Amino acid sequence: MAAQGRSGTNRDRVQRVQEVLSDPRRRSILQELAALADEEVSFETLVDRVAKQEPVDRDRLASDLHHIHLPKLADLGVITYDAQSRNITHHTCRVADVLALASEALEDRR
Image (cartoon, rainbow, N blue to C red; front, side):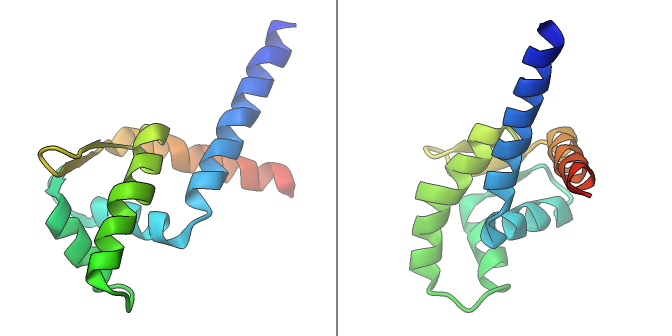
């Protein structure tokens, strides 16, 4: 019975990871964060880096990051977003865990 519970929990985590990473912009955000030497970055720096990757209105992008994408990544546990200080900290080992779960899910589909 406990094994089923853990299996269900793992499935839930995998589904959550798939949902969050299904969005190209969130994947782009994680790629930009991973490319930085520091684990902490300002909101403005991240907006600038993501804006260079896609033709989009910068103000709209900033709003989307603040209200949609960064909270979803924070809920997943791969970043910490402090809206007051406007700093984002990415957690490298958590990103690796999330990517491993996503990879596992892809393998299960085959």
